[in-house]
Image 1 (tube, rainbow, N blue to C red):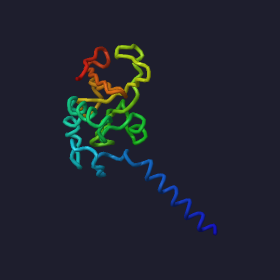
Image 2: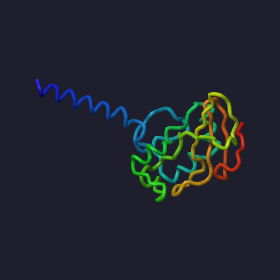
Image 3: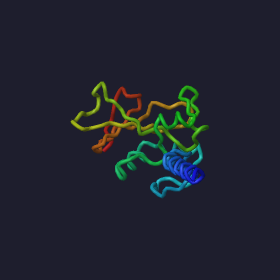
Image 4: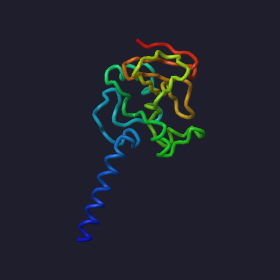
Length: 156
């Protein structure tokens, strides 16, 4: 009886681990079939192509979410990324930071009741994160900043 309970608990924990770990493994180690814009195997040198601002903006318009190779800061930290070291390409090859909430505290982006803003690194070249970001809203607006949130250009 105790062996059956132990086996059931182990099986449950394995299923939970697989369920929650899905989507945060290094890009290219699994095939999701969701993104026609990327190949199955991605090298760190290709991340600059994958994060080109127009490529990411087009994907957002079409799919209403970031491509699978984006990972939030929290997920990346859990997997060993250290922003001060600029080690994302070494720790998580083929990944870029994106999907975190952007607060728009300074109200430089349009505000609307129920609108939430999110950010994603674009034009990323490995190493430390640059100043280029896409800001996108839950209602379809997309803006670009190339000067770390000082000014914004709407992408139509």
